[in-house]
Length: 114
Image 1 (cartoon, one colour):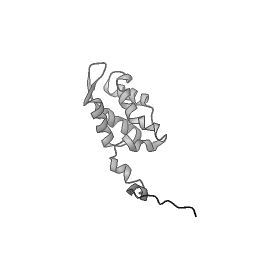
Image 2 (cartoon, helix red, strand yellow):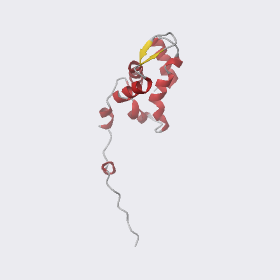
Image 3 (tube, helix red, strand yellow):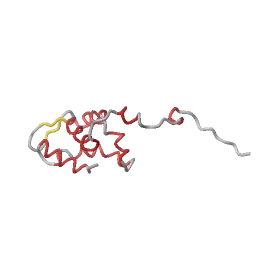
Protein backbone atom coordinates (compact mmCIF):
# COMPACT_ATOMS: atom_id res chain seq x y z
CA UNK A 1 0.00 0.00 0.00
CA UNK A 2 1.24 3.41 -0.96
CA UNK A 3 1.70 6.47 1.21
CA UNK A 4 -0.87 9.26 0.66
CA UNK A 5 1.77 11.39 -1.10
CA UNK A 6 2.39 8.54 -3.56
CA UNK A 7 -1.34 8.38 -4.29
CA UNK A 8 -1.42 12.18 -4.64
CA UNK A 9 1.44 12.13 -7.13
CA UNK A 10 -0.39 9.45 -9.08
CA UNK A 11 -3.51 11.66 -9.11
CA UNK A 12 -1.48 14.60 -10.41
CA UNK A 13 -0.12 12.41 -13.21
CA UNK A 14 -3.59 11.20 -14.07
CA UNK A 15 -5.70 14.33 -13.64
CA UNK A 16 -3.19 17.19 -13.90
CA UNK A 17 -2.20 19.73 -11.29
CA UNK A 18 0.18 19.00 -8.45
CA UNK A 19 0.19 16.38 -5.70
CA UNK A 20 -0.92 18.91 -3.10
CA UNK A 21 -4.22 19.31 -4.98
CA UNK A 22 -5.13 15.73 -4.01
CA UNK A 23 -3.24 15.05 -0.78
CA UNK A 24 -6.09 15.77 1.66
CA UNK A 25 -8.37 13.26 -0.07
CA UNK A 26 -5.74 10.53 0.01
CA UNK A 27 -4.98 11.31 3.66
CA UNK A 28 -8.68 10.84 4.41
CA UNK A 29 -8.56 7.28 3.07
CA UNK A 30 -5.45 6.38 5.08
CA UNK A 31 -6.36 8.21 8.29
CA UNK A 32 -7.66 4.93 9.69
CA UNK A 33 -4.02 3.79 10.02
CA UNK A 34 -4.15 5.66 13.34
CA UNK A 35 -6.43 2.89 14.59
CA UNK A 36 -4.99 -0.18 12.86
CA UNK A 37 -1.44 -0.05 11.54
CA UNK A 38 -1.81 -2.86 9.02
CA UNK A 39 -3.94 -3.58 5.95
CA UNK A 40 -7.08 -4.07 8.09
CA UNK A 41 -7.38 -0.29 8.32
CA UNK A 42 -8.73 -0.47 4.75
CA UNK A 43 -11.97 -2.01 6.03
CA UNK A 44 -12.98 1.41 7.38
CA UNK A 45 -12.79 3.50 4.18
CA UNK A 46 -11.43 1.50 1.24
CA UNK A 47 -14.81 0.56 -0.24
CA UNK A 48 -17.73 2.06 -2.15
CA UNK A 49 -19.21 3.80 0.89
CA UNK A 50 -15.82 5.28 1.80
CA UNK A 51 -15.59 6.80 -1.66
CA UNK A 52 -19.03 8.39 -1.27
CA UNK A 53 -18.03 9.61 2.23
CA UNK A 54 -15.06 11.40 0.66
CA UNK A 55 -17.39 13.00 -1.87
CA UNK A 56 -19.66 14.28 0.93
CA UNK A 57 -16.66 15.61 2.86
CA UNK A 58 -14.72 17.24 0.00
CA UNK A 59 -17.56 18.01 -2.40
CA UNK A 60 -18.52 16.46 -5.70
CA UNK A 61 -15.47 17.97 -7.42
CA UNK A 62 -12.25 19.74 -6.52
CA UNK A 63 -10.49 22.27 -8.71
CA UNK A 64 -6.81 21.59 -9.18
CA UNK A 65 -4.13 24.23 -9.64
CA UNK A 66 -4.61 24.02 -13.41
CA UNK A 67 -8.22 25.13 -12.95
CA UNK A 68 -9.55 21.74 -13.97
CA UNK A 69 -12.55 20.33 -12.09
CA UNK A 70 -11.92 16.74 -10.97
CA UNK A 71 -14.64 14.47 -9.50
CA UNK A 72 -13.72 13.44 -5.96
CA UNK A 73 -15.23 10.05 -6.68
CA UNK A 74 -12.63 9.44 -9.39
CA UNK A 75 -9.85 10.29 -6.95
CA UNK A 76 -11.27 7.95 -4.31
CA UNK A 77 -11.71 5.16 -6.83
CA UNK A 78 -8.09 5.61 -7.94
CA UNK A 79 -6.87 5.38 -4.33
CA UNK A 80 -8.80 2.20 -3.55
CA UNK A 81 -7.85 0.51 -6.83
CA UNK A 82 -4.18 1.34 -6.33
CA UNK A 83 -4.25 -0.26 -2.88
CA UNK A 84 -6.58 -3.22 -3.46
CA UNK A 85 -6.73 -3.77 -7.20
CA UNK A 86 -10.51 -3.34 -7.18
CA UNK A 87 -13.27 -1.46 -5.38
CA UNK A 88 -14.99 -3.68 -2.82
CA UNK A 89 -18.26 -2.91 -1.10
CA UNK A 90 -18.45 -2.58 2.67
CA UNK A 91 -20.26 -5.92 2.66
CA UNK A 92 -17.25 -7.50 0.97
CA UNK A 93 -15.20 -6.51 4.02
CA UNK A 94 -17.62 -7.50 6.79
CA UNK A 95 -18.57 -10.86 5.32
CA UNK A 96 -14.96 -11.88 6.00
CA UNK A 97 -15.16 -10.85 9.68
CA UNK A 98 -16.09 -13.60 12.14
CA UNK A 99 -19.20 -12.89 14.19
CA UNK A 100 -18.66 -13.00 17.95
CA UNK A 101 -21.33 -13.13 20.65
CA UNK A 102 -20.33 -9.75 22.11
CA UNK A 103 -21.31 -8.15 18.79
CA UNK A 104 -24.94 -8.98 19.55
CA UNK A 105 -24.82 -6.88 22.70
CA UNK A 106 -24.87 -9.82 25.10
CA UNK A 107 -23.73 -8.86 28.54
CA UNK A 108 -20.70 -10.49 30.02
CA UNK A 109 -21.47 -12.45 33.15
CA UNK A 110 -19.60 -11.37 36.25
CA UNK A 111 -18.22 -14.16 38.40
CA UNK A 112 -18.60 -13.58 42.09
CA UNK A 113 -15.67 -14.64 44.19
CA UNK A 114 -16.65 -16.98 47.04
